[in-house]
Image 1: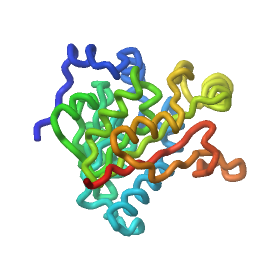
Image 2 (image 1 turned 30 degrees about the horizontal axis):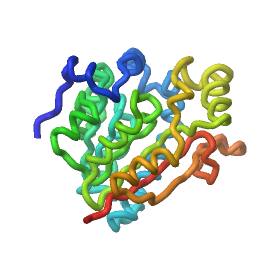
Image 3 (image 1 turned 135 degrees about the vertical axis):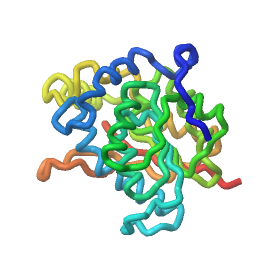
Image 4 (image 1 turned 90 degrees about the vertical axis):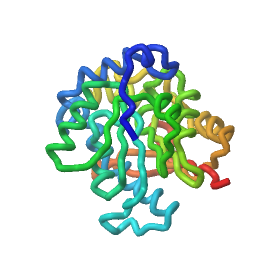
Length: 257
């Protein structure tokens, strides 16, 4: 199938795309693959989310997560893929990966990095709406650290749902809308520790787990897992937990029938 190419007019009329957010991330493209740059937090988080996605997909499709090719034969879509940090890791597990993002500079960088790394990823400068309109569906659809940056989260989540095959999975990673998330994700993360550039997040756009669950339940999905993400103070590593006050991961299944 031909790549879905970005059309500026369509992007501007897309109800979920915030062009200011797209431009902000596009401007940071040159540092995306630098673990010490503005995307450093993403690189720290990546091993955890790769393992979470791998394990969820293996449970769903009866695979062995210890095998190098654990995701072989599965079509995985990463919506809001940025410059491909997650896409490349999943491709190395032998998944057939499509990465989509409306930020043109990021997509170009993702293609270049994949070529340099000799990793096969199908990158597209496209929105969730454009992909859904094309009729494509995937075994696993990912929206990782994206929901909090779109203009209309409920509509965006619905478009993601349309892209999941019957029997497939939707996996999301985002930030809860709580006092703790304001304190840690914005005040500490952006202003005190400078883990993220100032203005990366808007607290009002954070989404509670129940809001995502309600949207996907209306689309016939069932919740498979809800896991919080916290920092281990002894090892300084990110880990799964039962604390959902700030970052969390959600897995949903679309029924086969």
